[in-house]
Image 1 (cartoon, helix red, strand yellow):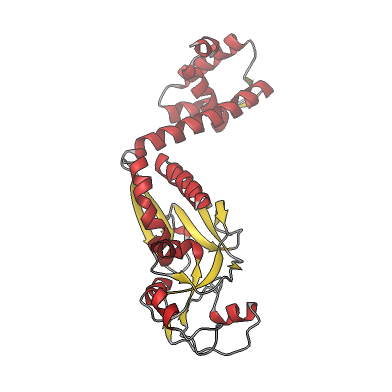
Image 2 (tube, helix red, strand yellow):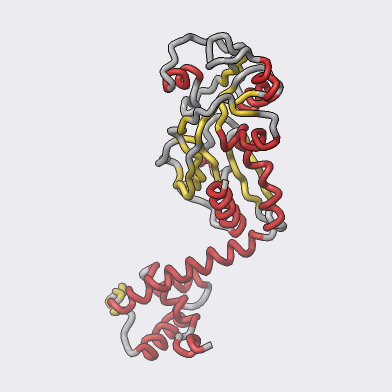
Length: 296
């Protein structure tokens, strides 16, 4: 290739990077496992080829020239990129990408779509961590998190985000056996008790619609998955986040109670840790999640 004719010896470039970083021919030689004379010889040959000095030799010290600093900065970045690419290639064959999300998001949105990701990436293993408590991105256990809330987040960077709308949902037979009329205290309400109040409560829903009656939920659950299953079995009304219940609206096990749609203040966010693992598996899973979130 043509660029190879324009490049000096790669051995000399690697030695230059080590000398510049260590500020010592001796220390660089020890790091590279060669003699100090070998390092000095390679640097001298490089200086001869470039026609410029790389270091100003002083008594027991060396000082890099401006040309050396310019070349060294490029070498550091290039060698770092090569190292990351090699590490990603080495780990991709058996790499596991770990995705963290709430129980509801994992069950209702993520799991039905994983077959699509696996068909596109047959060599990548997926591990899903489902929990309704906040995913700890600083632990290093999670490669990608799907977090419901409002960014920014102090422990990671958002690479994709989408909103949602909330509606009232119930089973078709529950809707059919109601006496009719608007929402009232006589209806059966199913509540989800969660600490994270970015999830809307019934009291917040009623307040947003300027309804003035008090409700006493007939059923309460601490997981949204249980709330949805209870609603599908005809036991009452639930608040439905459309991204999560769309599958059940499509198959007819849930129906919208009315035409009211309430925009969710919070969003679904694809979040990478502050110090992400850069592997082929993580990159592909991140790109797939971003596309899937936006397509839905």
